[in-house]
Length: 198
Image (cartoon, rainbow, N blue to C red):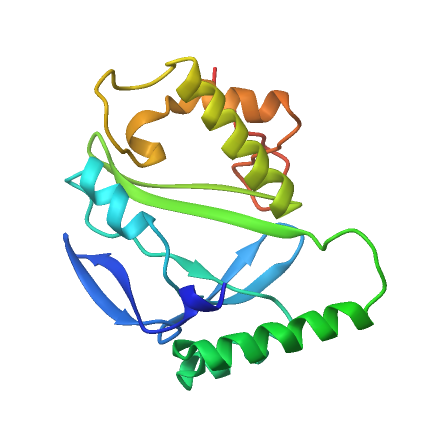
């Protein structure tokens, strides 16, 4: 986690890749169950992969937050501490010590929000998907469903090679499989309008 917060990270702006310092941009975004959360730009694959497979896209950014106490992570990242292996090791050891002081229990909930703006016919449109839950479970489930789809050759391509998920995984069957396994995706922050893939 500390590495995505350090150095320069990719973003896709006005149809081209730019490198900007991690945690140098911030915004406050509403999330289901949590309300407004401060986010910072961090490193992730989407600013590289999404424009490669959707060449007309104009902007791809990745922002992430940690809720209360986020500055315990963000300030050291902004100071450049996570660019040093020594500081990363020290910080990881401190986090481990703090985690051992807290009572054992289930991991806390996380939330996800994806926003897309674009043209549909003559109209400007905004679409938002969101959800909340255990991030470890959802990440593991999405990896296992994706691996099964690759193994079954349920893909968008029949060519060999290395692909980002959005370039090879068929989205509707993937989302249907996630929903069948209990993952809820919504089109509103109140989590009242479940995503329909019919």
